[in-house]
Length: 222
Image (spheres, rainbow, N blue to C red):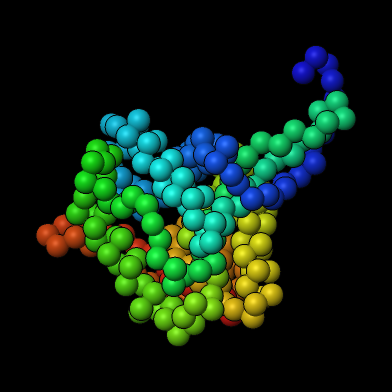
């Protein structure tokens, strides 16, 4: 940095745009290396990394193309360099603010994918499609749903995940709506800390397989 001074400024939040797609994709892939759902649904991602990048990027491109339904918030690490603030994306959250509005875009279990286990994807996303009817239907359209949350491993345990979730909590409180989500066991600790309560433990299993995937369905109503 040419001997200039550098000082931390802390995390900041902003709405993501299409210009952020590569950064968002990188954070997702590097941040979900330990995520059970990724291991379960996309076990061939290391064998076909270009394919995994392509379809992950497409997923977020679809989110950004539906601003009437989804809001993608970026968490940035702000550092002051020689008097100028430099921001680096380090995490993001996808909020569904219109849960009854049909989503558009590619099927996450797209037949062309080489990185995915097709049967597991069908089982996982089939269960996800039933989740609303089973657990979230009582609130109908009056809920804010957290679709995805990830913080890059190098920036965890600094409050960034809490900051991303707090945005949705405040949005829901302004409408007097609950926040709903489905978390991995890894994320359960954060949501318990933020006063979410467990509605159910979901188990996904393909017929004939021993391997399972467990997720936690949660809600925060106040």
